[in-house]
Length: 153
Length: 153
Image (cartoon, rainbow over all chains, first blue to last red; front, top):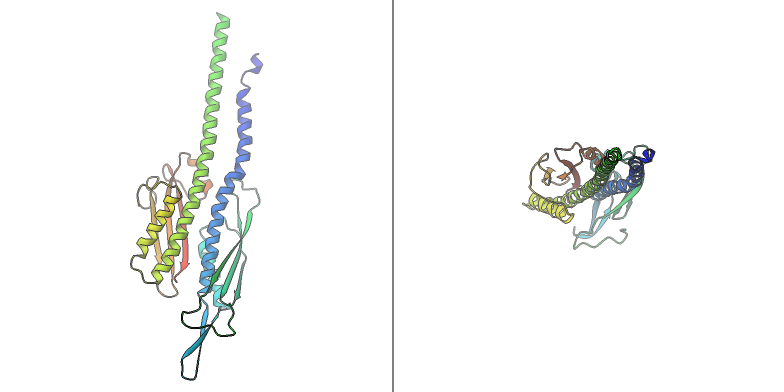
């Protein structure tokens, strides 16, 4: 009988450890969702900044009146601005280890895709979780000025 | 007499085991709950900074006088809608429940607006603060912060 004393406590400790191991993925998921939300915000800001660099070319007739406008994404300034905002928005997130940045101008649309790898805060040895976040920004045609016939977007 | 004494000892051992188990259980489930709440609060703070940053970038670009006040109000609403308890508007390091919204940047053309939302989450388990990845705890709280940087529109 005396050998059976004190059996509950070790069992309880083992059970708690098992529960802890089961809880880690759940808790990590909650934390990582916040990180993903911040990454999406960075992509949104990057797309807006890149689209903000769009060039508006106005075509005028013989009298100098604007009869149409053509929107073009700045091939250099657009991606550069997007990359700058991506970096600035994610700099505060120590969990972002790598990023791959692709800017695809398509007429008046600018698409930003970024791959984010976030480390698990509760389990340092676990592989990082990776997502791809996408944001699309659209440059609007100026009101009252029709798009030029060969304009895309 | 002897058997009664042994019986009393057995009873005390059971009480001690129960107390230790209860402490372990409360610690485990309390820590689990506190971490889940902190992770949720972190996601809400990130969302509030996103909303406030977007509003600030648009309103200050349009020349609105009260763009800071509007962005602060939107951040507060986002925090409340996220279920966070707001006690006072004060700088970081204050009591749990306090929140603060800071601004930086320029509203001119080509400028950007940076909005930082701080929130002090109540936390009874100080060891959890580093796991949330949001800096050192101040007293009985976890300092949650998120910064959104958007180009002025």
